[in-house]
Length: 130
Length: 61
Image 1: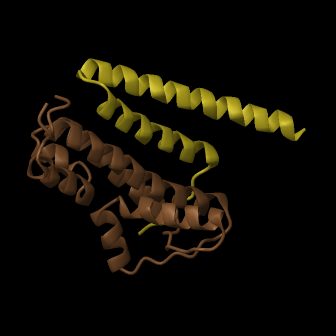
Image 2 (image 1 turned 90 degrees about the vertical axis):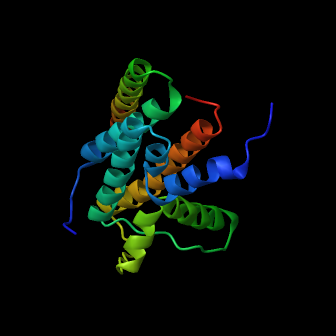
Image 3 (image 1 turned 60 degrees about the vertical axis):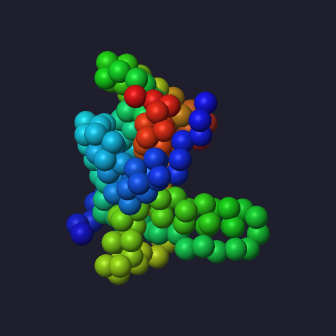
């Protein structure tokens, strides 16, 4: 089996990262793109409304490094939502309380769900999936 | 951006809803299978939420 070229899948995967659901729209799967986009965007917005904190890369002991770098990558995976949020000056300190804590998890989870959408877009673009 | 205060239950239900929808869309091949799998995941999330909640309640004494 021939290896799919980067040009075949990169536009869809990059678009899927930047705009949640965008990769599926590019690949002419609007229904699936709409569900993925709505889920990721709503989850991210709920995270912001719960005043969740955005992670900054921070190193220290192993657990600190994993949590902060992992959280930062998770936030970053939300694509343009993350960049817009930072650009518009959202800066919420990490505070005690279950609502803030859920908010922080929602922000990271939105990015991780977007990662799943990116993988799905890659599978469709490379012909591994319909 | 309005501020939102959700209970543990509401937040975990919303988390379950969005996660189930994404898992349904990306894992199966037909729309029928996708809906079925999303509902199945949501029910599993619910079972875990209620099960773990009762476990913590009873364990707390």
